[in-house]
Amino acid sequence: MPTLEVIEDDDTNKSPLLAQSKGLSKEEEGALFDQIASEVAADPFAFQRLARAFLEQTTKQDFNTVNIQPQAGYVCKTHVEESTHQIYKVGTTVYINICYHSAIPAPPIASEAEIQKALNATMDAVYRVPLSLGQIRYDDKKSLVLDACINTQPYLRSEKDLDFRLYILELAMEFVEGSIRNPLSREFTMPSAKSIGKIPPRVLRLPKPSLMTAIKAQVSPQPKWQLKPQFTVDQAKGLLIVAIEMPDNNSTSWTLDITPNKILLKMSSDVHTIPLKQHEIIVDHKENKVDFYKKSLELVVELKLASKNRYI
Image (cartoon, rainbow, N blue to C red; front, top):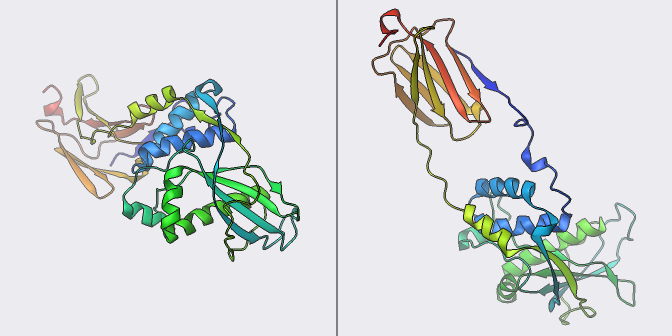
């Protein structure tokens, strides 16, 4: 039985998502990811493909600077629960103003079932609400005040849907915890005011419409993979060469079985049969081999022909 050998070429063994993004800030990268996610939420693999491609290509010139004035919505009052980094004392009051603006990227279009997965923190949930967190401010009692801005559409739903509001509050608290580097208590109250203090305007860096048009042009269903083997006979070496273009590079999940007149290619739970037609091969010949070329996604099987088949 030939052993599958994976051929590494160029930098294909390095994750493209770790490639440098031509000087983009974290805010710009986040805005780009949010916009792409809005287009392909139902297809995580498409999201990874587009994020990888456009993060490598995008520069600062692909972004617009947008000045916005967030609109006040409602307030969450909580406190620092643990002082793990000694930045703020335990018990320090934290106010989070939930505000909104139409310029903040909208969440992806999703079915109610997908939204409920996110609300229930299901592991395979793909729905997410983009959030822009403002700078830390302080009120006259030295309490922390932060403004968490979301798109108008999810804000309106959070006004009417308690579960959705809790989801937004949890999301905002997680963002704040990342900013202040201290855990917050999940015991909170909601003051009657629409905001604590006046919410200042802010500047956003958002992808230009031309960039999003290019992204949308690539958000098209990928054609279903079809097995289309190509057969070649190397008469000088007495080999039958079978080349197969594979759908991905997940070669660890593939197995091949060789019989005198067919190849059985197993991928996950699917078994694909490749008839060798009029060719008959020597199953256990030492020259039999299988190579997989990661860059071109080609699986190449070389099989020794029985002598009577060498010139067919």
